Image (cartoon, rainbow, N blue to C red):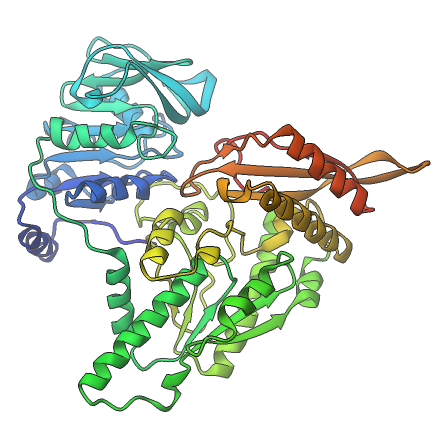
Length: 547
């Protein structure tokens, strides 16, 4: 969980005052995290604008606390609850006269508060829709009359005399509205699919709330390295290394922090500890990985003087624990058990002081975590690297980052492009790309299918245009003819998406000729496959990975 502001106690107010001095500002914004999957993206938007924003706990922060804090603007994020259920929030805050922006659920709560009717809609909206501006307002200054926005809601707000309609979408007559100092939108300006989302936040902050101060953001890479310098000085570190972007960025951050500490030690004539020459062990766990994952780790890490790579083949362990497991939840939990046991065993052997993972905020959020508030948050899926309670202290340097910010950090510190722009791959590996029980035969099929799909994406110069792509061995079989024989084979589902940070995604429109070519290769070269289909759903409503 990430920390949130919970009470306007004297010590907390003193810390806020000190931060204001550093920023040379008297301005403060509050973001109430109502359980949205995107709440951290809102925080990042405000950070990018250079304003001071605190994430607040709606269950604990009351109107009396707000009066002590004196924020110039308030934002309520979306969330999985309904305005009927009314998540924990002091409604008196709406009456303080402070400019307030409600996002999705936050807007519904505002509308409910002023007396408007909020009901479950017959036509829900998930995905990208066109916002049509109905009335000019400072919130939409600089926006065209029609632009794409991303919506994900089931409730609809009905008209009310106090509510001025600012915009609508296909199934949402009031997609944006205003009631005095209360402003709201039924879409998510913080995601990339909302084309002018950054402008909307800028308008709210500077046009409506009249903010004057912008604080230049620090290099996130320098900040991360400085934090790690303090944490790992003279320590032994074990890192879960996959060869993907996130763990690679973390490995290079550790390298930079150790190098910086050595320079400090030399300057101060401080002797290094005996194990300081190789203080990092990278553990690569194979068994449910892609065809080229192990080769990738060996290529980029095995001969580096600052890290010792240890490869562990856990195929038999994974298959044993996955036996008779059919649901994705069961399989994810089984995988986590093997993953945890191996890392704890290796940490004990190495006498590691810290176990380090490349966990992102996205992983935390989808597992039901994130900002520590009393708001309900949906658990989308259980991630392999979240909430494992290792018996050795854990470090997660990228826990407050999403994929694009992690990549930006990696770019700053010299992570090789092949690692930086490698497609994301889930920690549970190929088991989330196999429906039903995972067997050695299905793993073999999944690995071969993935190999062909990714190879051809690269051959056709499509790989670098995509965020992620994968192939699923579905639970469906189809009758097929190979030669003069009739047979049955697995139905393989291919998918590919465009995204920026993984919170949202669009199905990639791959060329038909390419899909046909890949389908022919897969059915010709893999005896167990009977047919190939392509998924065209966006996130939302689906998740990027199959399970």
